[in-house]
Amino acid sequence: MDDNISKIKDKVDVVDLVQSYVKLQKAGVNYKARCPFHNEKSGSFFVSPERQIWHCFGCGLGGDIFGFIKQIEGVEFPEALRILATRAGVELSTWKPNPEYQNAKTRLLEISELAAKFFGKQLHESTSGKKALAYLKDRGLTDESIAKFKLGYAPETWDGLGNFLAKTYEPQHVADAGLLAKKEAGGYYDRFRKRIMFPIFDLNSQIVGFAGRIFPPSAEGGSSSGGKYVNTPQTAIYDKSRVLYGLNFAKLDMRRKNKCLVVEGNMDVIMSHQAGATHTVASSGTAMTNGHLQIIKRYTENLDLCFDADSAGSMATERGVDLALARGFNVGIVVTSEKDPADYVRKYGTSDFAEKSQPFLEYFFQTTRQTVDLASATGKKLFSQKLLPLVASLSSKIEQAHWVNEIATALKVKDEIVRAELVGVTRNAQRVTSDDTRDTLHDTRPKLDVFEESLLSLIAKKPSLASTLAESERAFLPKTTDLQAQFVALKAEEYWKDFDDAALDEEFKKLLNHLKKRKIVSTLENLEYEIKQAEQEGDKARLATLVAAFTETSSRL
Image (cartoon, rainbow, N blue to C red; front, side):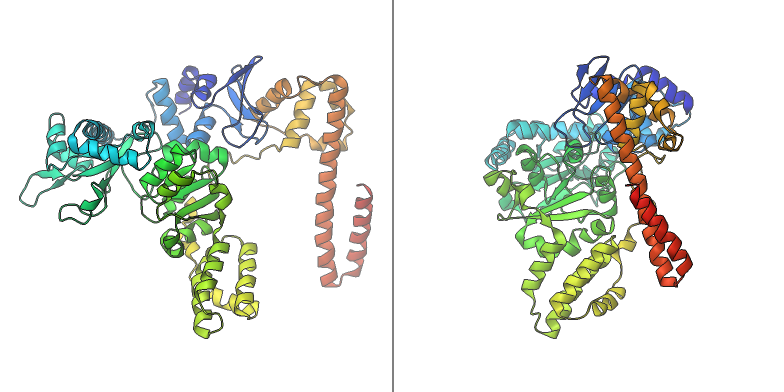
C-alpha cells in the first residue's frame, strides 16, 4: 500500500489536483483561493507546491492529495486511493477487485452511458421527442440545463433501445443495467417507453440509472404507462437507498453553503440548480434512508426539506425526518405556495429559500397544534402521539428537554407526565446503526486549534520568540505531527509575511495571553464543579481548600 501511495504522489501534483476543483491564484511561491469547504469572503485557503500540501487558515482543514480527495469527494481513504490511482494511471498492486465483477460493473456503466445518448438523440430528433423537448422548455428548463443533466426521451416502441444496444451488448447485460425487462414468453422489451428520461448520476457523474416520467402527462395511468414515474430497479451499479439525484452537481455547494436542500422530484432539482440553488438534491420520491443521510453528513449537518404544503404534515413519518433528527441534523422545512416546488422556482426563483426555512420541529409543533383540539382528551392524545416519536428521535438531550417542556405547556400538564410518555415511545434513533453514526472523514489525530497553530507559526517565523517564554509558558507549545508541522510552516510563510518585528511581538503576546486566559477559565470551571460536589457531600475542609484555590485562580485573570 505504501508503494502505491508513493507512486501516486510522484505522479499527481497537489496544485494540478486542487486546481481541477478550485480556481487558484498565484501568491508568491504558493497558491491561494477561497476555501471550498466553508463560506469566506477573502481567501484563507493555500496550496504549497513545495510541500505538496493544502491548508485553510480559516476552517483549519488541510492535508495532502489524499486528504483533499476525501474532503472534496466525500469518500473514505480506499476510494480516494482508487480515484487518485486512476488519475495517475497507477495500477494498485495490493488492492485488486474481482476482475469479473469489475468488468461487469464497467459494462453496465458503458451501457447506461450509451442508453443516455440514445435517449438524448430521441429527444432532439424524433417527432415525439421534440414535443417532449418543447414541454420541458415550457416548464422553464434552459438548453444548458437539459444538456447538463443529459435529459432524453424514450420512444413508445417496445424494442427501440433494445435493438440499438443489441449491436454491441447481449440483451441480458442490458437487462442487468435495468433497461430491459423479460417477457413471460421469452425475450426482452424496453422497460422505458413514451417517457422523458432523467439519467441518475453517482458521485463521480457516472450514469448508474434512470427515472422516466410519462409523456405526454395525459398518458399517466394508461395501461402501458406503469405510472407517472418508472425508475431503474436495483442493479449492481444502482442502489436507490444510497443515491441522491443531483448530488454530483450539488456536493461542492453543499460544503460552501453548509446546507443541503432536499426537494421532491427531478424537475425540482434541475429548476433549483438553474435558479442558483446549487445545493439541492432529491431522494426521487422515496423516504430519506440511513444511506442517504450518511452521504449528506459528509458535506453538512444542516438539512432543509422543501415540499409542497399538502405533503408537509405526512413528511415527518414518510420522509425520514426521524432518522435525520436521530443523526443530529439541524432539520429545517421550506413550505412553498405552489403545489410543485419546480413551479415555485420558476415563478419566484430561489433567493428567498433561505429566509423561508424554519426549524422542522417548530413548524410541525405549530401546524399539529392547529389541527387538533387541545381542550379534549382525544386531541391531547393525538398531539402527543404525533410529536413524541420525533422528540424521542432527537440525539440531543437538551433539545429533548426543550420540547418536553413545550409539549407539557401546550397540554397543560407537568413535564414529568410527558417524560413518562416519552419513555414508552420507541426510539427511531435505534434505526441508526452504530457503525455509521460518526463522520469518519476527518483525521482522528488531535488537531491544533487556530491559536496553538498561530503561536507555533509565529515562532517559526521569528524563532527568537521562543526564548522569551518562561518554563510554565512552554506548556502552550503542543507537539505536532509531520503534517501539522508543515501547516505551521505554511502559515509562517504566508500569514505573517507582511508583519514587521514589532507587530510579530505584539501578536505573540496577544496569543500567549489568550491561551493563558483559556487555561485559567478551564481551571475555574473544573474548580466550580468540584465546589458543588463538596457542598453536596458536606465536606467542609475540602470545600474551604477549593474556594481558596478558586479565589487565587480568579485573581490571575
